Image (cartoon, rainbow, N blue to C red):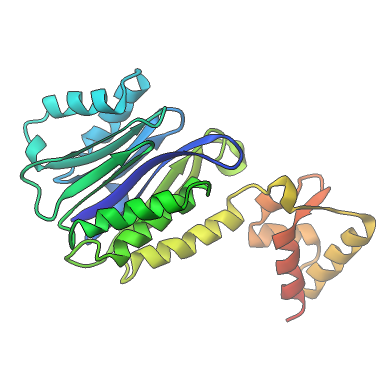
Length: 276
């Protein structure tokens, strides 16, 4: 009933990320399938999903087990293993996937360095192959984009043969959370939608704008002239000050606390808003 991809990749900043993308003809699949911890690994549990495997699997990985070892230990202790499907990627990018013999057709998966792809009740094996090709073709891009590209490719190849309903994307990286307070870089869910993967892509674009810190290349130094322009633009947009506009629109991650820089995207958004 589900297709997913679990991955680890080194980002443009040289730091590793782990994550899961999943879609299904199932309500709120993001509540059931994905789990990930930065520096530990990620997994997807599906088919007759054993949600306890999320905590168990991550604990095994945290204790030093490889993806293969963690998978074998989990299967040994589960008498419904033939009905389960799971993909795991460990801290170093080792991958393992299991499709039980009792999973409904088409069911199967693929593993490679840093990636595990799996699905059941799919339109066919081409779903997994399309996901693999998209994953390989997107090497070098941020993990969130690679996972989403693979999910979209699987969806385009037929995905869950029963139809579409929900999708989710979870990505973790050390210190990547809001304000650096945790490791959750992306945690997005589309729980009930006619086209959930497309909607997930829209949400990821918003996530990248609102909840991702600006890179050095995106920062524009605020000179006295630009500061005056920002205040004027904010007032033209109906706000008393530039900082009031920033707080109203939730752009705190894209503006320096001391006012020394503003993100180029936010500057362009404000210029457009003030001209309406």
